[in-house]
Length: 167
Length: 160
Image (cartoon, rainbow over all chains, first blue to last red; front, top):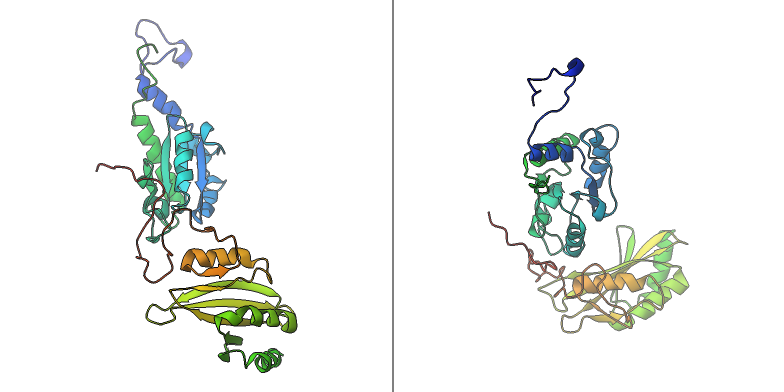
């Protein structure tokens, strides 16, 4: 970020600034996450807690849930996913537009947790790619907030291929 | 009061049942599979056991006949429960359906069929209710491998 040397900036404000295009888009995207809550089990209570006023994920631009995957870019899988539900999760993931990110919220979504049996999927990363795992049964709100911040760092550091030589 | 209705039931159904014991405040009747329907009808019509609570099974892998099928009923008149049990073998795990007496039996029998493979003669809708089409075997039987999975979505090929 700098100001041009040959022209004085009017009254302390920047007229323009320079940055990398990927960084700029990453910065814009990381504060504009639209989560789709795929909520299946008891972790939902913790999800409600972290997304409402006391802990307030809106501070990170990640509070407005969209109830269709087509309008969201952050898939939050909150709770146990069974084998019977796996095709639904897969379909929801495929309906989301790029760019998209996935958070496995809680130990069941991360690895199956203590459900190692005929019914439960042992971690959603068996069927869809996962960007961030938040363990815990359920995770503390602080862990979720830390996870969202880590996801923001990841988004900010990513390449954003929508930016090309034409823009 | 509960003891009174249990005594009446025992007096009436004692000759039909193989066992009739009271344990933990509940009367338990063990009957032959073909007599279940009549016994339950008597309990419902004469003794006021008007609520069907559940039907499940118990797997005794070493025993012959291998399965217990267990029903629970509640009386909203006497405020007591009764348990009806019967034994069926692995070769033919069939009992009569209770759909004609309690409509809710339709769904609970489906679950029992899912989990233990008990067949309910006369229930024409034993499609999977908790499991899914294509699931092989009955997961709550003791010989179902503990960690056997039958995924519907093929697993991703993850490179570490």
